[in-house]
Image (cartoon, rainbow, N blue to C red; front, side, top):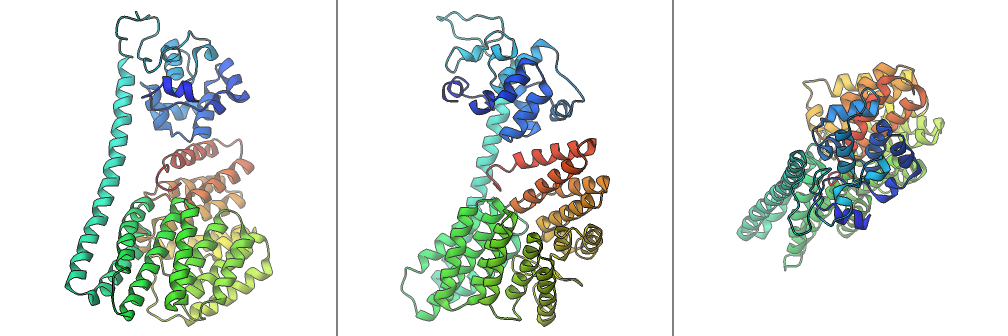
Length: 475
């Protein structure tokens, strides 16, 4: 979209050539079917309703939603012109005169019907677009401000580490341990990109410390800390949906684990890789990794137990009911062996309950929808009631539990309950890649079974809006 994009420099939204030249878009424009045009822009570019409304000007996100759902239409010529200018659709395609930005580079500022003398400066485009540009610039400023804030937080942590390190290198492993305990909790509650940036700053500093001379015992302790930081970076990258980075950090975690002889650390990295494969829809790979992880970790440890529960739901995704049940029994026995003070919050924890974690997911995947509904409701009641710590400390886990409930309700034929669970899940403040993946599965399940239900279209719109907001954060 090179030339067109260059001519539209400064516009917040320009749809790509592939979409503009597609048969679906050409037909929709020829027929002035704005419901289809808006839907194509929404789905193919990932632009939220708010972004589309801002690009067009004098339009709210709720109106965009109404147009996509067919509740409202577009008729006025001025509005059609603003749609063309907002999306970067040439006037001819919509039966309009050529738009001002079509024939001039970076001078698409004129109103329709106003011709510009080459010797005179082009008059400014109508005010709403100027406001849109201010909004766009403001959004960029906010994003830069957030990034700067996270960088500053990481730098303050580094300053504290430097002070502690200057006092005595022997205190550094203790301080790092406290910092890792902090991030073990916040990696589950902070926006993934934010915690990733902080962790990266601390990880880079700690790696540099290893290059200095120190006693071998301290070197091993700090190497272990580096491994835990890499493991947390892998988890944050997974939540962002940056899988290549996640695998790199997991590989580094496994290497550090081997260096210091700490197999449990490696087990957590393998669990992260198994989770990625599971949500990517590769259950056999997920199953293999979970099994390998159990083979390299000791029975009776937390990570071994978590890998056993992961094996259960991966087996369920393959449709192997016998292996699922076998893994469930094994996980139940392993949970019984865990100490009473086992961690129940944070990245390296296990949720308490009568059944092993992921039991409801496994039932749903095996098509036992009514049982899955009952099991998920029990989980939500015990772990995520409004006053429960887990709800605030594990917002993504809470959202995923709701989406499993939605999928189970959809499978049981309860469309209203399924949609309600989906909307509640998407109302959270920490959307992460696994959550969005499940939300998409619920959308497809609803469309496949209740295609004509208006609630389904509303949920899909909300899902697409949340997905479009993840750019630079979780995707």
